[in-house]
Image (tube, rainbow, N blue to C red; front, side, top):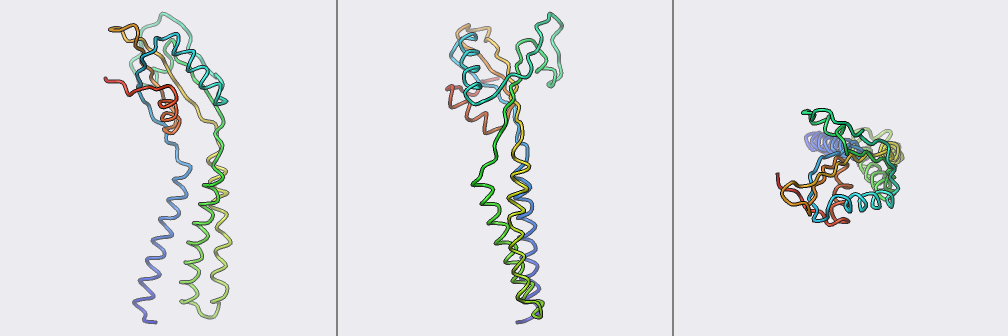
Length: 191
């Protein structure tokens, strides 16, 4: 086989391997977002619905902001210290499917790298494809990093123009936000 073909195949395989490493690392990335949602349910009833929803999903209250007549905070992080803010916590389980998928993906990528190395090093050609046995390391990495405690911070606010409407400020993982929005039939709030 010609040398330029080998060099370009090796280079492309290394680029794919770098992409695979970043894909595996991204599987445990924190995807916390802050949304403002609107509900056509009044505040007290909405609080009950939220309590039932999070209890069903095995979340527990870890912090309730104290009711105090202090001045309104201005910083975004202080919003979660204001009266009425509640922080829920729950253990998020990693996906077994994703762990196996990442293991298989890493195993096939390492096998391909081993094939390229076996072409470059014909003396140990039968040993290089054995790199594929390192594939489950990617699944173990995901399993260790994805199983963690997630927090949901929320604050219910009544809309002053219409007492029948409520607005919720929520900071949580984007998947949890989407699930909350569909389960309680919430809509994105207009600023």
